[in-house]
Length: 412
Figure 1 (cartoon, rainbow, N blue to C red):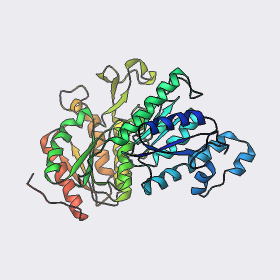
Figure 2: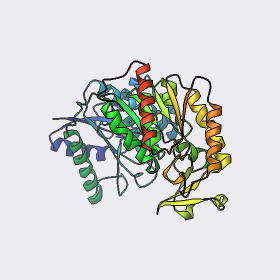
Figure 3: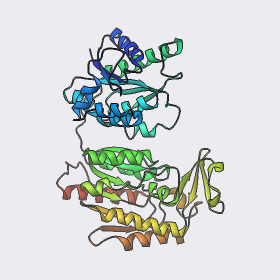
């Protein structure tokens, strides 16, 4: 038997959350009802009242309620709500959490759920599920389920959706996940255009005793990798696909934001960095590309993704920016430069081959690195086996330098 937290605005959506709680109990699980409504007047009796939630974070909601600003109250409850779930989780009193809501309820519930670790069962039935859910999910694994109709009463549609959601969270908590793997973890960044490099590096790192987590460098992947590095889970970073910097600079759709390539540097995690796929900026279908780029070179990666070649000026700036990120490193770091191509399509004969633009990036990168940063320049493509092996050697040496090496079963 598991215990599932049913967290929501019980002042406005008490009956709906009560229905879900009953469905969970029918599956044989216990429920903790948590009110995160802003009025403090729930329509059903909670196990934990909204004022208790606020108190756990050292906050008093009453002055805000007296001012009558609903938006201010919602923002405050979103800020304090993580405290209750973190307390219940740390005390091993809950095995999962579910919530229902519109935009405000989803904002409060997702704020609380984002505080929980990756892998903890979390589900929100939301009216916002068909739009951009990135602000709610963040870099975590919160499941967002469309409510179809508004979360406003019980009817033939909402009962079905809410019952299925209750069944889903019950199924999630019932699954036993093997957590026996105790190998130290390496994070690696990859794109379709650097797949061969990472695929060659993974078995070498696994043979050296590491587990490798690969992140697709598509914006959300880069942000997730940064957050896991920040959490302390990662012992080494193989960041050969830094393409998200190009989207951030030029205005592509797969930017990871300004904090990309900062966590390892700030936390002193050993890293290997390469300018992988900085030859490209990502856009959607051809019709979605801004008119100001009409005279640029494009390549259709697939029907939904169109790539644009970075020019020499952009490459020069990217080299400086990448060096600036690396220069902030407080731990061992190596920069590897593949002179014959930083992606599949920028190698000789490829549609993005541009020796002048590449040279602008490579020279800018090498010349902008501070003294003490190890740089390795190789006359190969990024997807050559030689480059992958060099990346692994550099990373293992960096990890060993901080005393985190493990037993190596063989030689590269």
